[in-house]
Length: 260
Image (cartoon, rainbow, N blue to C red; front, side):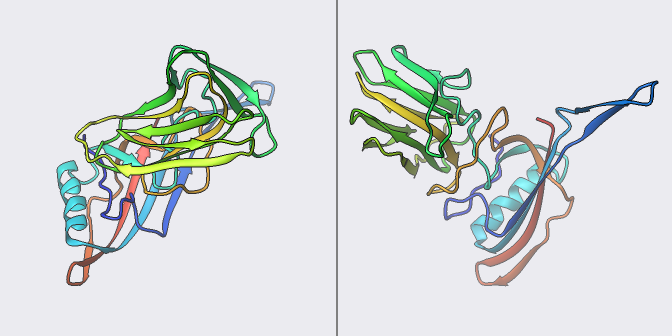
C-alpha cells in the first residue's frame, strides 16, 4: 500500500496544519431568466498544508521516499486525514455502511449524548458475542484510536477492538466515551474496527470514530465521505526540507485530493 507515512509519535502530521475543501455549484440558466442550481458531486478538492517542524532523519527519509516514488505531483497515494474521522456513516451503525453479526438487532432513533435522537440501540439476541464493525483500507502498521459513546439501561458491557487490540468496558445508564488505541505492527492492508456486544446485552451506541493517532480528539460526524483519501497527491513538484540541526528537519508539505 502506498500511503503517506506516520511520524514516530504515531500521528499523521505535526501541528499546526491547515485543511481546505473546495466545492463547485452548477448553475443552469433558464430561458425565462430563472436558474436552477445544484451541487456538482465528485468535483470536490480537499487540500492540506502540513507544517512539519522537527522531523527526525527517518521521518524525513520516509516522506522524501514517497515523494520520489510518486514522481512529485504525478502519482497518487493514500492519505489519512489527521483532522478527520476515518469511518464513513459514523452514526449509522444500523445502516449499510456497517457489518453486523447474526443475532445483532440494531435500531436507529435512540436518544444520544447531545440531546438528539441520533444514537442506535443494539441488542444481541444470539448465544455468543456479536459485533458491529467497519473495515478500512488502511495499513496495519499505523497507530489508531477507535472510540464510541456507549451506555446501557441494564448494566451491560461492551468491547472495542481492532487488529487484536481490545478493551472491555462496564456500562451504566450514563453516556460514556470509550476507546482503545495502539499499533498492531501488522503488514495487513486493511483493518476492521468493531464494537463487541456480549450475548443477551442491550446497549446504546453513538458517534463511532477512528483516528490515526494514539488518543481521541473531538468527535467528527461523517456520512458518505470519511477521512480516508485514496487519490491524494503532492501539490508541488519540489519538496524543500531545511536542516535545523542534528536529526532535526523542517518542511512545508502540501497535499491535494481531487474527487471522491
